[in-house]
Image 1 (spheres, rainbow, N blue to C red):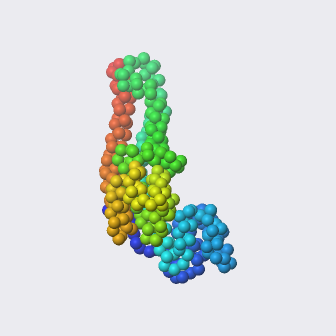
Image 2 (cartoon, rainbow, N blue to C red):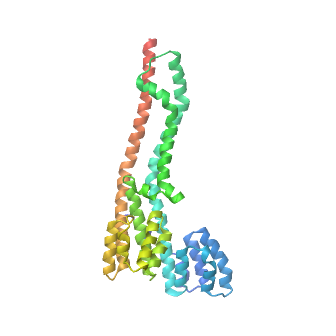
Length: 338
C-alpha cells in the first residue's frame, strides 16, 4: 500500500509544536491557520488576534467570529482551548488537510498521461483538419476522382474531428470535476465504470479517517458526524452524513443510521457495527480507512495499467485510420496519372 499522510501519526505541524510549548492561544491559532492553508480561516484569525492579545476571553472571541469560521473548526476550538487537547486538535486538523490533498494528488497523477495523449491527438486532429485535409480535398476535386467510401466520409467530416474530440473530453472532465465545482452530479460520477468505484473508495476512506480523528478528540457522535460532513469532498456522502447525525441524535446507533443510506458502502457499515460492540471504535474506523485505502490503491494500479495503453491504442487507431483515408486517394491519383 502507498504511504498515506492521512494514516500517519507523526506529529509535525507547527501549531501542535506551539501548543506543546504552551505558547499563548493566539499564537497557536495563527500557526494552525498557516498549517491549514485556508485563506478564509487566515482572514478570520487575523481579525481575532488583536482581541486575543488584548486579553479578551477565548470563548467570547470565538463566539464573536464563529460565522467567519468553518463550523467544524468552531466546534473543535470550543472544546480544546489549551493543553494536550489543543495539541491533539491541531494534529487531527493537519492530518485531515493532508488526507484531502492526498485525494487530489492521487487523481491528478493517475489521469495525467491519458490527458497528455488526448491533447496530443487533438493537436494532430487540428493539424490534419485545418492544414492537410483542405488542400487534399481541393486536389481530389480538381482531378474529379471517385473516392473510396471511407475517404469520402473522412474528407466530409474531418473538420468535425477536433470539435467532437474536445466535446467528449470536456464532457468526461465535467463528469469528473463538475461535482466539486458545482456541488451536483456525485451520483453520476460514482457510477462510472472502474473510475467511479475509485471515487467511492476515496470518499469512504476520507469519511473513516475524518470521523476517527473526531472520535479520538471525544467529540459527541452527532457533532462528529456533522464536522465530518463539513470536510468531505463528496457532496452526496456529506449530505448522507448529516442525515445520519440526525438519526444518531434521535437515539439510533451509527451502524443503523448509515445502513439505511445507499451512499454508504455495506463494508463500512459492517466495520462500524463491529466497532460499536468493541471498546476501540476509533480503531475500527481506522481499519475501515485502511481497507478502503487498499481498495483505492488496487484500483489505481489497475487504471494505471489499462488506461494508458487503451488510450494509446485508441489514439493510434484513429490516427492510422485518418492517414489511410488520405493515402488511398493519393494512390489512386498516382495510378491515374501513370
